[in-house]
Length: 324
Image 1 (tube, rainbow, N blue to C red):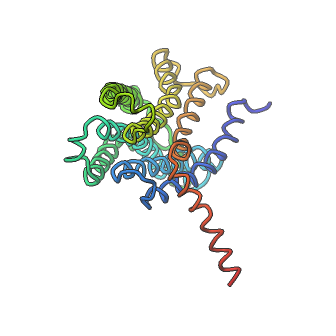
Image 2 (cartoon, helix red, strand yellow):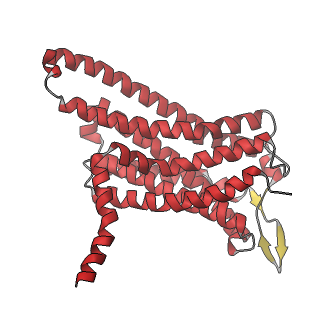
Image 3 (cartoon, rainbow, N blue to C red):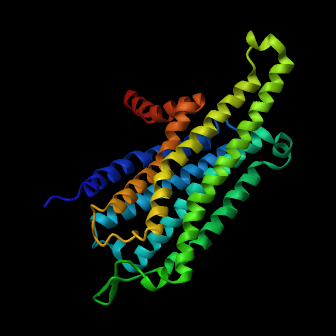
């Protein structure tokens, strides 16, 4: 009997995704770290943090868990201690990817709507402190995952595999922890991103009307550098935020419906609608770890120029060596 369609899609999707996502995020980190993209230092720090978190998601959630552990069940990755560590890192990296996106959204809100506050407080040191503090909190918040799984079997006195501890996930603490993970990873991020985007749009509309009133009809024949800068900022903000919301929406709805209808356990039925919806949601969710590079390239002219330079530099070096 042929394998279920969703498993065949997984077998193709995850390796292809990893092949694209790893170099894309590495290039993004290199390009943004050089500081030649015309972006402020604080926003560059947040964008580098986002790319780093996305790289961790690709390496651990996709490559280590969905590819290596799934296709090589007898490798060292299947030792219980290693398996539990991978599950723990999966949670932390995914949370960092989400919350760094929120920090980026807040940074754009402050930059556009709170000029005085930005000048006085919103510095590179503040950005680094916010990222570091949030990372530490996420690592502590995910610690229960280390105790939520146990070994599947013992071979030659070695613990192999990971399976959920039923007593943990059915206990009030375990149920609360699962809901807290969902709330912190989807619901609160959705609410915060929508809130700050709405506030940013409202501020821009009010400021635009006031600026047009002050400039009169001169805007018809002269370009406004300030409004052009704001337009580019808002395009970048909405592209990143909108991509996150669209790609995470399926996972959010799937989690909510499976918990409310008690269909979270599929008992090995890979054709169940709940399982297909959950796997589709995961694949779209991980895709958000690769889209930011495309967004930067599509919306930032200087980023595209730096990307061309970085891609061409190895070939330029090879040509120089060949000529010598």
